[in-house]
Image (tube, rainbow, N blue to C red; front, top):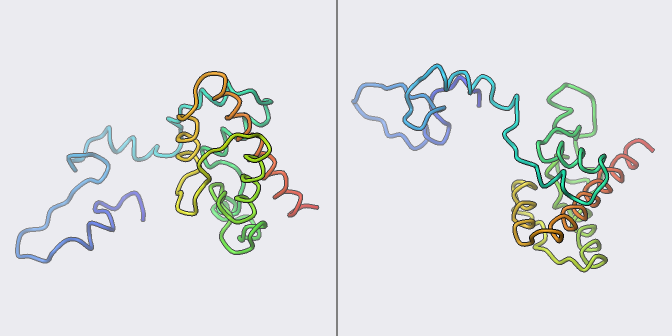
Length: 177
């Protein structure tokens, strides 16, 4: 769906035909009225981040893992879905499961789930595994980190960062080596 459309797709299907006059509504405000401010925000939507990742920089991890996690949570790593948007040639399928489109949030395929299970067994940290129904890795991550506090949160965040970093490195080994 394009940003310039005034009615959301789901709303179109829920509308009933009637003899009442047509109305225009603006999807970028709660009251559905156009404002210059909302148009400006809509134009810049996705160009800057409102993401609060202060916990990333406090984790007991190296800088490259922190930076990678920051990019991952903003869906800025160069996975197939992002390469396709840029019209770069690539293999669209996940190199681990060879079944689904590779995305930054595709961390619930069987290979990645097995890696998460092994890491949790090895570290003794048991978290709710990433389910196949999880839409966003960030949501799972925040839920997982909310269950722990202080120094333990920094340790758990580091474990998660190193796990996603090593999954990324293994992905790259399979593609480029």
